[in-house]
Amino acid sequence: MINLSSMPKAELHLHLEGAPRWASVREAHQRHYGAELPELPPWYAPNFRFTHFGEFQSLFQRYIHPWLQTPLGYAEIIHDVVDSLVEQNIRYAEINVAASLVERHGASLEQVWEILETEIKRAIAQGCVIRIFVGLMRNHGVEEAIAWVRKTRLIAIVSGFDLQGDEVGWPANKFKPAFDLAREAGKRIKVHAGEMTGPESIRIAVEELEIHQIGHGTSAIHDPEVMALLRDRQVTVEMCPTSNERLGYISSYSAHPIFALDAAGIAVTVNSDDPTFFGYTLTDELSRLIKERQASLVDLKRWTRNAFSQAILDEPTRRRFIAELENWSL
Ligand SMILES: [Zn+2]
Image (cartoon, rainbow, N blue to C red; front, side):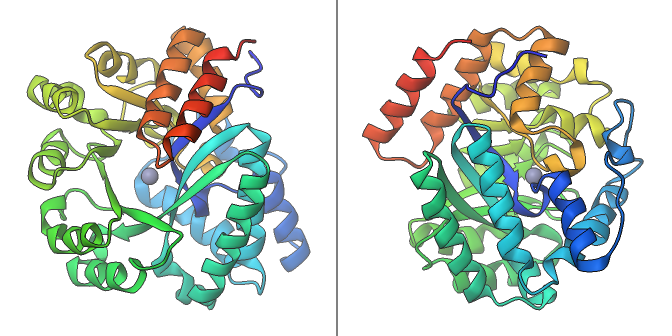
């Protein structure tokens, strides 16, 4: 595999709870619970596919939630995720935090914001800018989403909100009152759409809610009008090829539509989503695109530039990151 570790990178779609390194999960389970976890989990096998979304979710309950319930769980996980970003030369990352889980794990929200603040500073000192997005669960309902926005929209380190969860039963337009509140406070909104269901979910988010950043967007490929909408409105699409493959939302890695969207003039980006459970960090995903989809370094640079262009950065920093990327070579 080509070693892309020195390439300056950006990741827009990363869930905190799905991002610690497996070696760290193992070490934590050994230390806290005396449990011996395998060196390589079964779901890292190349042909592994989750049979349904619930099977994937159950891994969080089994491996991440017990860790989060230990006294320093959040601190340990956040520290590990920052180390992983820095190690990969990720210059900019948007991290989705499932804030609604914090108190359920017996941790305090204030404490988690404090840890994040400290870790964001530690990351900056090592050349990595981190922005926090509070994950809003569609299936927890509109009222709960509104409550979470009210509760967190004035927190300085919260850059925005990211709608996720059951796309089928909970179309994004139901959440307009929550998004309006967030926008009033100057926060950014993004939406997971077109992952589990068809292009209509993307159209609703972009047309009715004026969303400029879509998570996954995989099913756009099935509707030329939605493709045109994404291009014309200059929507950035956070694509997660291995995640879509492992969860069975695409028929195979080679069928992932990243190249088709790119060729249609849509601003696509590459992301790892939940590397703990899909087995591919951003660096691995980029290498996989070279190996299995014959992506060129020019492609990878263009997709990374798309991410820097959408990033929440002051203009001098944005220019610096893009210049560093343009000047980078293997
Ligand atoms: Zn996601």
